Image (tube, rainbow, N blue to C red; front, top):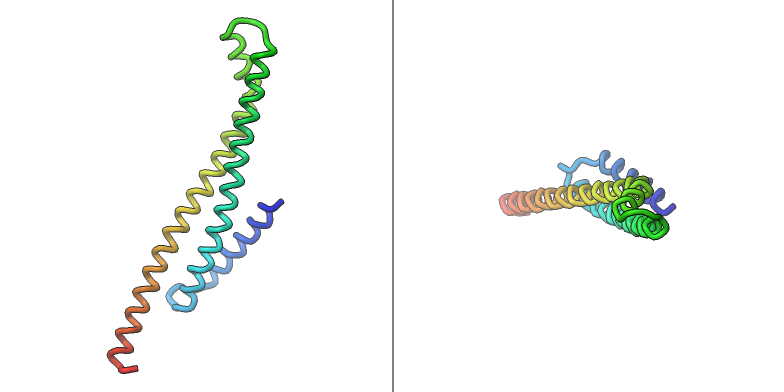
Length: 137
């Protein structure tokens, strides 16, 4: 599966980030680049989870309609039977949506980290410029 490879790569990226010191400007730049790469992978993982959610939703709606069409009884009885028959699909649907939400939240958190690290990078560059101006380098 493509997602297995993406998850492995995402772990590798986070492991590499752990080895870096964002107080060192070259490491800080690499941290920003790695978080950006992670964000791309997270986007793919979210898109896949969202697709799975939509597919399960469509399947649930199809089964629901088939049960109503094939069953006998009052509308309430048909609806009740359809709800019972689609229970497991609803659980799969919720699971896929929760997976998507997890990736969305991680994407946003990563975006906030990138913004904060870029701010740190700009501050460090301004400080280096001031030091160079003072010492005439």
